[in-house]
Length: 324
Ligand code: NAI
Image (cartoon, rainbow, N blue to C red):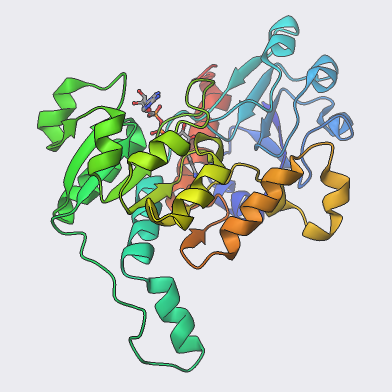
């Protein structure tokens, strides 16, 4: 089987060297899109990351009958056009439950123990403790929104820290409560009772801005952590909540408008068509704040998670597992 591996990174070439004697893989550093689709001529399958744009134009001219997404999300593939062209699309449904949960705790601890501020102080040559007093997680209440793969890992880690865990999930599995030692509550109860609130549910039409002004008004100085999707949180409402102390600090791996993160602010004028400038400015206001820590949508990015993604992609190429 001839595979065109787009968005290829150097480590992938090395990692795959001894794992793919049955596959004839050619690596392309560029993404698959209408400009590069010619490169895929004569291949049986293409493997792509989220940077590729596998739209109707690309799918109409692909020789391959299999698109293997090296990601959970597949919104960069036009599924209707794939079906019309009888092209199978596969994804990697699970790879990062513990990986994203660990990053979540990285953010929680950075905020609760002011680790980033402490490091910055030392870099500036100061070893005094002024402004660095944090708080213990032990005995505090953690509110987990979404008890799927990542939320469950977060709950398990929280128990290790001696935290009391409550959770909200409209499709929650009651058996989990006993198994993992937490209690399901309403979203309102979770927001008003938690010392730390962490988001682990998907972005859908009904969850967009699930935390907005009314919800923040229920919070009483809790930390907010978001490693799920930026659009779950109304950015303007979060800035107000930080101003009026309903939220004491926030750790965000995802922002509502990630164009800003990926593009240079100097070319903001060119972004007008694709990105919401108001949101970009609000993100900028968030990032400037000393009570907000932002990481660049990096929670998934561990060596082990990347290996799991590639291994599952190989299964998908060989056996067409995980069809979407
Ligand atoms: P999952 O599908 O295993 O779990 C999602 C959970 O959310 C389910 O239990 C579901 O019932 C629940 N849910 C659905 N609607 C809800 C609502 N309105 N309120 C509360 N809970 C609700 O997904 P998984 O693997 O745990 O991932 C969660 C999210 O994390 C993903 O949707 C994705 O957006 C994000 N993610 C972020 C990454 C990063 O690098 N920052 C990497 C991977 C995932």
